[in-house]
Length: 383
Image 1 (tube, rainbow, N blue to C red):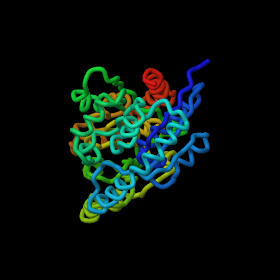
Image 2 (image 1 turned 135 degrees about the vertical axis):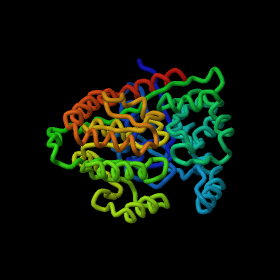
Image 3 (image 1 turned 180 degrees about the vertical axis):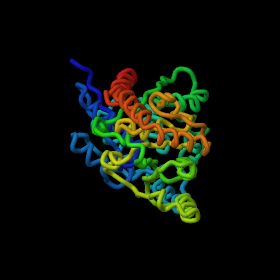
Image 4 (image 1 turned 60 degrees about the vertical axis):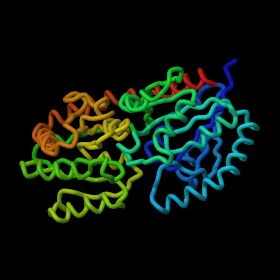
């Protein structure tokens, strides 16, 4: 008879298109297929697409409006204070659920929440932390209590999962011996398999490139815009499609650059999209210009849509793209080199197709459920 394990996953957000949420959902979808496993998910924001998806899979979900640790201006401060005041009542309720359901282990997804960790101390249950972000370097996250407080909590957990070697290199020097630490790359749902039947190989055709993600400085949209602008001055015909919510000061800066340089016939703001396979099907090239990509779901998803991926040679992007084999790498922040790579693919459509096919073949390993198996192995060791 297999071991009975009841896992409480703690989420920070409930929208399926959020990278960290989607990655955890993909893992849970495979874990619930294991014999003897029951999964519960706690979420602190209003019910959205991820929770609907999980409930259809038979996952038990619990809404409790816990606070988040990332600082977010004056409005965010008041929201944090109110939720902090409410937290003793929320912990009392959640502790009762843990006791009644006989939970075996508690699992926190991302560093911007600590209610799972606190609950583990209250219940004396083992706790695993899944770290998906650098913090300030990639998302501009500043944590309440600072990084010292985070490291203290990490060192009182039983296990830590990092989504890339780059993430481990940041955190592991601060972790004491005896804490189980693993690098586990994300699973990607088979739903993202989106193989092309036709490639844009006619050299007279223009190319469509896309950069996907939150429009913020760390994601490098302005670098991509300037590179496309330069590539087109060098004779290429490339459109850049920016996929992301059109909001914030950086979006305004980027939009003003496009307007001031009269680039509206080259640069398109497509807004936030949910049907990503359909969106990518119309593209030829994917650009990942992030300064510090923790993993790079967008890289793997782009490969699974047969896009020729071009990425900044930094952090986890360098772990996913083998230069000139599964994509192209350029020096982080180097607009001239990125422009050169774009011109290269514009002129050499055979290479464009080769990289797209090689990238697809490489990315297929992420749909095999390996992450779920490795996460499950850690859970069974610690529960």
